[in-house]
Length: 131
Length: 131
DNA sequence: ACGTCTGTATTAGGCCCTTAATACACTGAC
DNA sequence: GTCAGTGTATTAAGGGCCTAATACAGACGT
Image (cartoon, protein in one colour):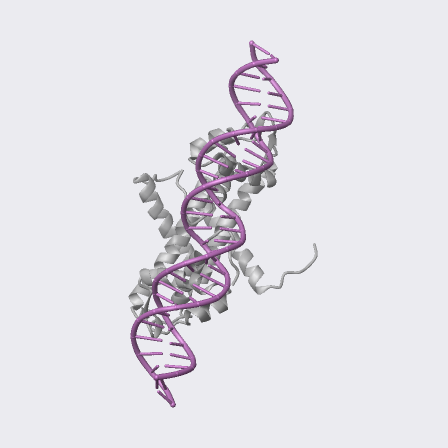
């Protein structure tokens, strides 16, 4: 996994793990990969992975059964709340930033429109070399 | 100024300084406060402020005249480009995050709508009608 | 009992960030 | 020349992150 050098790795792991739970890559009640296995997959130290998992646990998104492993919470309501929370955070940060640039609501909407299409182009089409 | 403990201070300063230039709090060609003065205002060490300013300079947003002080670039085109760049970055990060949550364009628009109003309520308590 | 799996805790070291204090080089005012 | 102000560079100290290696505690299969 690629990490942003200007942000703590374990913070980025919390985001990634949360996302996996929300989108169902890690379904409710399922067993998580072990700390050591996760560390290998993500290219980080087991301690760093554990730090992220500890935070996830603190937020009630998973629980550890010391000898059996770690499991995603089976409270789908909690997961739905997480989804809303992550969406709100993303939106709020976007709003803070564009308002800091003194943009109005309508301008922000147009901006989003424009960039969304750009993303679509980049994802579906192969960027052509040259120019 | 309030800092996010999970992000490097000088990175946050770069964002704040860029924002000030874009919104005209630091107009094109104007003289910036000295390193020591800025450090006092922001509650950081002069070295930290200087690190952020060095990055700003590297990006061509200001220049230093060693004994006279530091000045915002007078190339308004560069500032306009910065404004667009910051807006794009904000939008792209938002889009990446909501797409990571498997949201569609329409859902993202609705989310933005909802949160924008929430911000208005929290910030102004009495959102202005009309415009 | 033994080996293996799980999570958990500890210790050490390297690295960067941040603060702090200091020194240097240059300009302008007087 | 002297003083004040500017950016710049250096050194030291403290702290947190990340890595690495190791050790501990409990459950399972054989």
